[in-house]
Length: 432
Image (tube, rainbow, N blue to C red):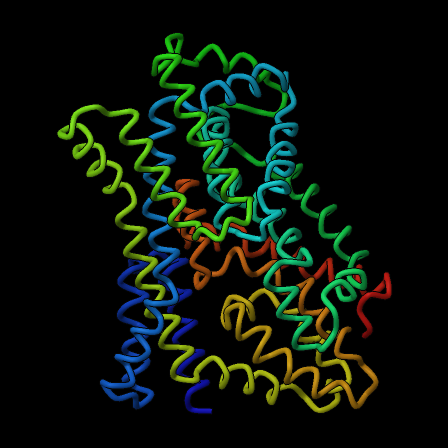
């Protein structure tokens, strides 16, 4: 109970300082967990173990972020995405909504590998120049992307579905077939979210839903930023990189970006002096967020290694009134989004889910029903959670902060989660 209280206080303070922008994320994720660890009675040896485990868990993502941001910054500077931007702008006429739907279509394809990081890396750089020209706020653009990612996140080969199926003791294909009617609802909600976002106020541009977007194409640079040969080179490097991200080569994603970035630097800048200058320039753009990712590793290491996560999950279950016991899975699902944000993906499925299954099974609620309930509702919290490392790739590419992202999109994702729960109950996917 003591660990749970410390954990809850830590999460509350963390959310307060991030959303209220009272403290920079790296400082918050380093200092607050260490204070919590000391208060919990952890020794120096314990804290050292927590930190090392946490940093090890975040290392690959941090390397991925550093090289991917540098790569896309280089490509954007060299005008790789300009033809795509101008083509889309020239074709959509006065239909801003069409651009947002296009975002969804690209996100569907890019998320087929089940990776949130790769989806951010493909979708946001491709469409951000267009959104910037339209004056779309970064959090609105990002909210559109994560709305679709929430539905795609539970594809049969995705991590959440595999986790849920393993805990419930059912086949992944069986679980996905069971929840499929709810998945359709989730995709419909993603489309509704995109349409609503396309009509939300666009900051500082004076662009509204009736303007002919083709007029914005006139602002495009008349002269190409690179030679035709260099443009083709950059395009080929990027396409090969994207292909390798989708093909199961066995190569780590961060290594693919490292190699692609090396070829990009060598191809675009001839002299060693210029290469060094650009590496430093692009590195400066990514260093703050890379520091944040390593700091998140410390946070994850402390709350998981100290047992705070498991203690919080148990406390939440024990706090429920006895009469709710037969419906524990349903009532907890109303709070799946904040629970996912607090506990993190692994603890949500591997710690909380088994406890809930044990509580409701004597009342005739099957394990697969509980797994389905948590899967279709908790997924909405994944891509707004400050403890999911991939989200820092998204917020950085979009040009916003994790605090602004949570503040703007938490209410929307939470509402979508509850709507999905109610719809799934009416469709018979979820048993009350």
